[in-house]
Image 1 (cartoon, one colour):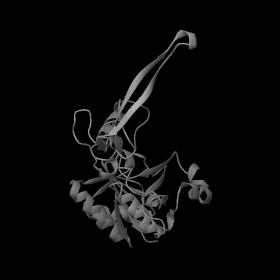
Image 2 (tube, helix red, strand yellow; image 1 turned 120 degrees about the vertical axis):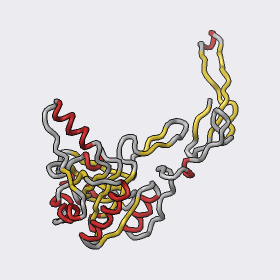
Image 3 (cartoon, helix red, strand yellow; image 1 turned 30 degrees about the vertical axis):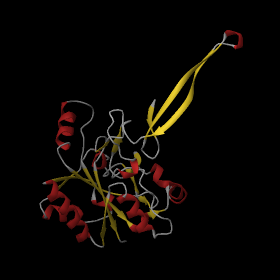
Image 4 (cartoon, one colour; image 1 turned 180 degrees about the vertical axis):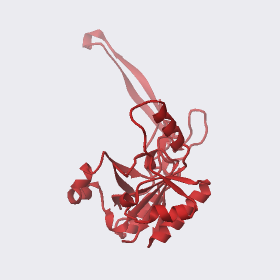
Length: 254
C-alpha cells in the first residue's frame, strides 16, 4: 500500500495477511510489516514534499509576534496570494487598473461603492476605461438568466470590499447581499479585495466575539484564504478550479 505522509513523501507499506483458526474465532486482517520512505510515486517519479510546492497550505506559518499587517501579509503570500498597500482612493484605483491591464479587462464585476466603503471608486475606474458591472441576475431560471450568467462569466476581474481579515492565516471575510454580489469573489479568475487595516483581527474566534453581527449581515458569510486550490491523492495541485486562481488583497490604511 502506498500513501502520502503529512510531509509529502510517499510511504510504501507492506502488509501480511493473518488468519486465525476457527477454534479461536475466525479472523482475517492485515499486519504492518515494514514502512519505507522513498520519495517517489507509483511510477517511480520523484515527488515534492507539500511544503516545497508553492501555494500549498502546508507552508510554514508566519512567526508569532509580528505586527498584524506583517503577519497577514506573510500568511497570504505563503499561499500564493498577493498583498498591496494603499493610503488613498487613488492608490486603490492604480492597483486595480494595473491588474485590469494585465488581464486586458474593460469590465469589472464589482461591489457598490457603499459596500466597498470607497465613495467615488466606480467613477474613478470609469474615468480610466473600466466599467463596473453590478452582477444582477434575472430570476427565476430561464433563458434570460442563463444569458446573463454567460455574459458575466467572461469578466476576468472582480473587486470587493472585505468585512474583516485574520492576521493568523491571511484570510478575508466577506458578507454578501444587496450591492455585494458573491460572484465578484467566486466567478472571476482574479479577485481583488479591499480590506481596511483596522478590520484586521487575530482569528475567527476573535471575530465572532467582537463582530457577531457579521454572521447575519448578509445572505452569505464566507472566509477566503488565498487562491482556490485543489489537489488529488498524488499531490497534483491545481489553482482556480473552484474559485479565483489569483487573489489580491489591498490593505487600505483607515
